[in-house]
Image 1 (tube, helix red, strand yellow):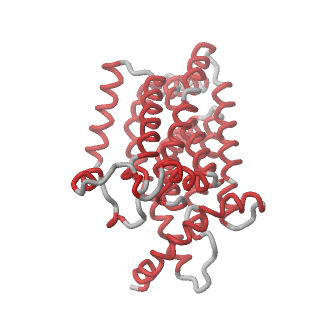
Image 2 (image 1 turned 120 degrees about the vertical axis):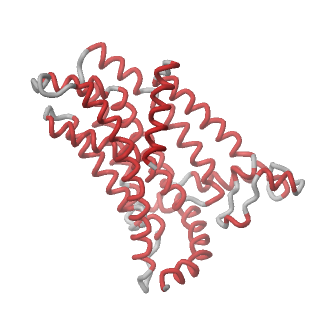
Image 3 (image 1 turned 45 degrees about the vertical axis):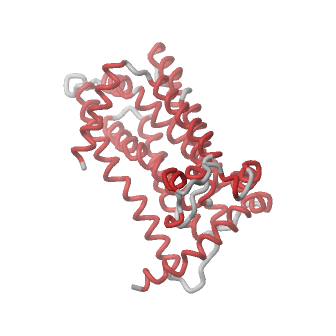
Length: 331
């Protein structure tokens, strides 16, 4: 597994050096692919209406073999499909996951674009240039980061399974089991983001090491929490469009990191960087309150009403798979 990670990292590094791809170019490609996914996913059946049961899913090849239309026109009109999805997309849970991706990814992207400058600046300020080589620290960080990410990613899945099994074993099961399954992963990601924002702002070598470790964790946890949560907490027929929407917004917001990085390098000052990290971390925490408040039914009546269609649809899907899950737990 690690050989694959290293080869991919080497390939990406070679690609960036050979073709001189900038952060703006990468974000532009990301935004284009996300927008393409959104357009295709809105109209084409295999991308758009994925059934909760994988046995009944028809791929493009299946549809062509069975001489069926790629558009879901036989059952509902495209307009009706759009209306059905809008009531799920209005849910505050989508806002929560969208903000987690947008602000969490921004912090990671902005920091990675300035890693060399940040390390060099802090080592110089601490008068440690004779002991530590900034380039060597960054080189080791780039080597260790994918290893930490690969090890940390499964932790989220283990936590989700642990919480879900614990809830299902109870005689009286609470509402919002799907949302409560994501509380611990969300808490873990939030703590890591807070520690990163705090330690990266302190001029201390140990704090720098902790910040780089948290950055490595967040580079994978932000996406794992976002993707896992969307899969669990949103109806199957809406997931494709929801992913595309969040990816478009995330890629567009990531463009802000480029001028911030340029300004920081030109001014030779990290103050704007610190302000950006703290503001996005605060916004991520603020929107993050949506998950626990809805999960434990402590939110307003207005948000409950908006979230009701999603809750009811997830409830139906959960009941369909509930018996099978309980049988596996009993075994």
